[in-house]
Length: 403
Image (cartoon, rainbow, N blue to C red; front, side, top):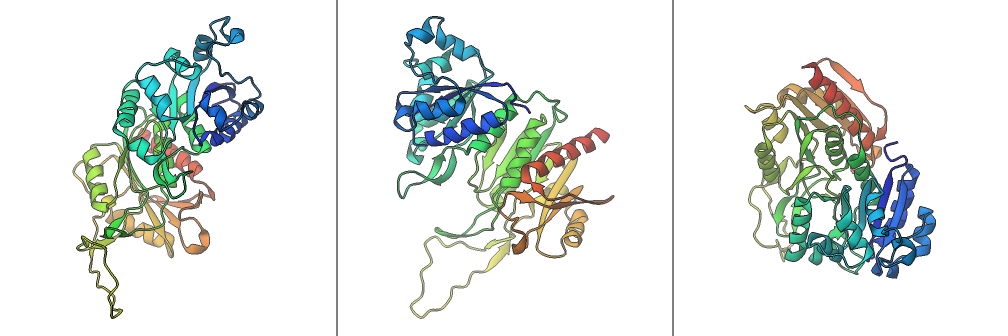
């Protein structure tokens, strides 16, 4: 248990996403962590000190000028007597204070005074997140060594609002806390890895596109596992509703051609794991305006053209990584189809899974895979996608060690 007896100073700032912090406290404590809560005055407008303190089983710190706490310079003690400072939710206000060295309440003072790792989980309206001032502050914090998880895309608390701004889910935040505090051996230290994840969206017109049901869960889990193993990871992600994994460089793309270009730009690398469900075809010429229904009911013709095969491109590239792993999502003859791809695509290993509708795997939380290699087939039992990722990364590390 990575988090057993680890002291996590949790700063809860004032945003509607503060309700998620209650579950976050529970999840951290389930894993043995000690949660020391700090709340801003605004946070108290969304969740109560009583709820936060009850779940943390500790006193909630709120006041920079508390006589009881400050008798021993409490804000300094809080800032240092922990293993990690976690701000969730991290509001635009809290980020601005830390980025600019402001310290006018307990939360901002702790952030300025700490010498421990800091992880922020931003949460705000999409337009706020896109504001140039917020972007500058986020860039400054990253340059100063602050780590971020999220924000995610999705529906906002405000009716009808959606976009990039949701706080990462508690379990995703816990996973990043574990990654930051993990002191286990790093078998892939010094290795570079490229991972693709999610679907691609191929435009038909400005409002329609060709896509598939991939959620990106498996690809993102593999990128996280590679980073935890010490690899320098570039994750090329199609459109997903997932937080960017901590410790991973993420390149966001939409179309297959953009994904191919981003992958090639990331070469050379030691490892390539091509998990993305890339659309096989795109419309030959996307319409510049929304295609309207015709008055006579005729259906428009949409000539298709083939998209680049990214796995094959990497597998036969002059800068081919030492280990190339592909994924094959099939609905029938799973192992036969995957085996045929092995040589054709120039891969060392194909991870095959059955995504026929009755499995419920496509876009789900679990996976059942078979590893197809030149030395045979290795079938793994049903497990979570995080477990698949961990086991696959262990196998990758072992194979590289043999070379």
